[in-house]
Length: 212
Image 1: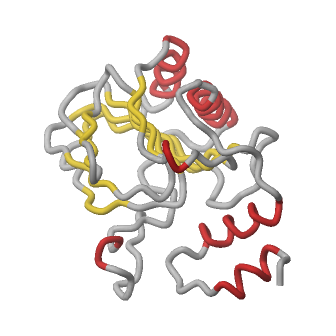
Image 2: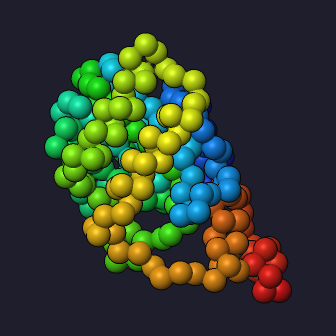
């Protein structure tokens, strides 16, 4: 289940969700698992044929989210824009973006939660609305069929199709990536992601990065 952060944190991030597992999808690797050779970790794939009352406020997570709805009616709202969900777009949300999920009507809702070792530049660190390509739609359709008889168990087919979808989306030229980071910085960033609910101290982060 989605876990709200402690109430001692600032009001604007009280809706943070630290776990990539929703409790209603097919779960794969937990947060901060070893990634594949391209730096990707699939956490879960989910599909709800009758998703309604989809209202979550101040969502803030240390992992990526990909949303695709087969029907119009739901949307995600950020500080500077609102993105409708529907069959004409994929919405990709980077980690550490605060947003609200809104939708009352019943729609067919598909999502993927994953981690990626690359980071977007500050200029582009915002959600993207992408026109889905045929290959991506085909992978989503194949993943959806696994839910036709209820939530599927974790399987190699589900895992490989989910990874293929992530690779297809993240290979687009729409993303502006930061160049490769030193391992010490990657360790520090991983520690911050894992402990973002806690009070962090510079000395602790420096020790993790081997800079103390």
